[in-house]
Image 1 (cartoon, rainbow, N blue to C red):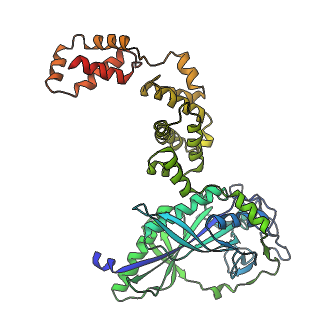
Image 2 (cartoon, rainbow, N blue to C red; image 1 turned 90 degrees about the horizontal axis):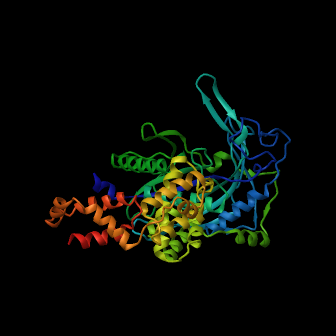
Image 3 (spheres, rainbow, N blue to C red; image 1 turned 135 degrees about the vertical axis):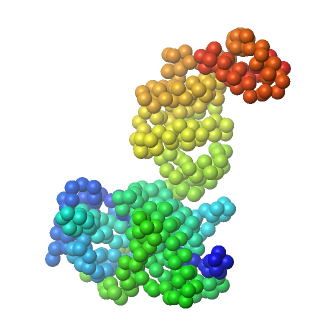
Length: 486
């Protein structure tokens, strides 16, 4: 069966809907917020009352331009709005204001990393501005309710070229787009709350054939893993259907997480089904050179470039740099900590990286907070701990004790170590006394060690550390034990 699957090539394109972090909605002055009490951020414009006139949100336009520049798109100096007509209970005015023939951003690309470390370019067909619909709430006891707080929320839709040929590539593309949106600060990327959603278009064709197969669309995928699973399922379904002599129907599918399968939702709409026509109540979007210049000046270092730079400049493993740059604030914390080290070298940079990826990430995960919310964890404090350890003033055990304390109090590690007299003992004569004391009465175990039972070294080290209350320099302990036990 695997031989049959190897004969086909999947063709995948994604449509990502990103809700933007503007202060107000797309075409009115209502607060752009969904989490408040239902139907409190509404007005005649976003409810679609007759005669209510929309007004363009400049912040919405600027954020779309910023995303276009970050994905190497061309930016139209003049683009228009259209009405996309369709009925849904949560679309009270019966149409959506969007862009159709002349999107503000077009012909771009984004890079994704392959498993072998190579980079692949995925084309961006278009990025256009639009508004969101409301939200239907299905209550078994009451029936369907509608919350219009989301109606009119500012969106951009990012439409890729059909350049992806595996579920894994689609997954990586979506992760990359979310990272870019978050680095730009224009979308929080929260899939659970629906501020980032994805539709996937899938078809298959025999390898070597240029013509596209008939595609299906999977709507409203709300997690990275669901995107990957749904695409994998559809690829297999298409191939099995074609191999059995059937025909793929161009329909809209829905992913059912409970059964881990797709199911048909409705027939796939075409552009003419939406009866697009120019939005009569809004003028053109005019993008000036000043607007482009201002947006260019706001562009930050993007995730892939930052990952490559951190690995190169700080000498940390490329994989570790990838984990750090998943969250821009975490990557910034790493750099800020490195700048505060007393000695700037790659060994200490690696210690900072290890400390963040082990101790700090565990706390952030347990508390479900970001590094910016961890007010007792400061870059200065982590730099002090790393310096104390690297200078052999405290042991790794004491370093963890100090970290645990400052997480609770926010106190300076230097001050805490001094006040509790936790400095590591590195006086050779004192450590020699600890070693002699630990080996006293251990003649039998010493003979066993010399006879080849090397795992007893751990026992001897543990005994020395216990006698010294964990303050003896472990490296010196190891060296002196080796001398004594030869």
